[in-house]
Each structure stands twice: as structure tokens, then as C-alpha cells.
Length: 158
Ligand code: DQA
Image 1 (cartoon, protein in one colour):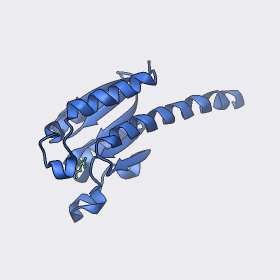
Image 2: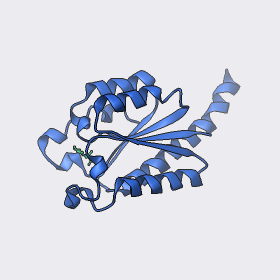
Image 3: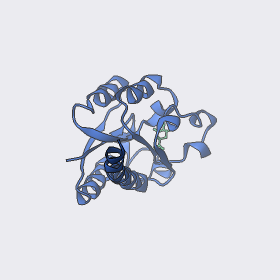
Image 4: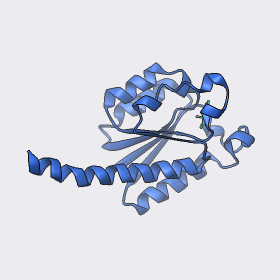
């Protein structure tokens, strides 16, 4: 079964109580549950992982190919703006990645405008709160379906 991996970075475990005026009232557990159900309805398995530690996120990304993950959905939190190591991990495994943010970092402080991920993502979803994760699951399913349609054509012409 196709697998998606939903990764969340630091402080996203506090969703629900963390700056609710910016990040909303929904918990990460609620977000993960809805994303999991949505993926399952599409016949796709979704695994979820959150960590406040950069090295744990790197470890999970490095494991992803062995776990048969096909697309990463990633909200790196504040690591978005700082982590070349996480960027390198995504590049190292070579998996397509969708970057998600609850808020719109471009409309916030200057230091949030730089992302180490946007230029290597297949797409970026930001500013739609928890809905962004559902949009990302749909986008990942669409990406996989497009790949499945493309693959036989590639084989037929070679
Ligand atoms: C965030 C935006 C980041 O700038 C911030 O550090 C976060 C959350 C978001 O989802 O809007 O932790 O990634």
C-alpha cells in the first residue's frame, strides 16, 4: 500500500493551546486523525511523526525509503527558517515533499520569509490553518495518481 509520511516539527505538539490566534484551536492529534482518515478513504496509508528535535526528524526522513514512503508532507515549524540539515535530509532521500504551514509565514515577521524547503518542495500550502494538512493529503494523492498514469506511458515508449 502506498504510504505518506506526515512530519511535524518543533512546538507543533502544542497546537490547540499555542498562540491560538495564529495557529487555531485544533490539536495536532485531531489534525493527524483527520489526515489519516482522508488518506485511508483514498486507499493510502498515512504515518505521522512529530518531534521537537532536529536529529529525530532527520532520522525519520532517512528511514522513509525503507518504510516505502512515497511522499513526505512536512511542516518543519521554526526549522523551516533555519535547518540546512533537514533540507539536506529531504534531498538525500529524494522523495517528493509537500511543505505545509498553518499560518502564512510570508505575511509575518521578516525572519519567517526565508524557507529552506520551498524551492525543493513539489508545492507549498500555507495560511489555511488545519485545512492545509487536508489539502496536502489531497495534493499528495493527486501527485501519486498522476505518477501512476505517467508510468505506463514512460515504459511503453522505452
Ligand atoms: C509554522 C510557521 C513557522 O514560522 C513557525 O515557526 C511554526 C509554525 C506554521 O505552521 O505556520 O512553528 O510552520
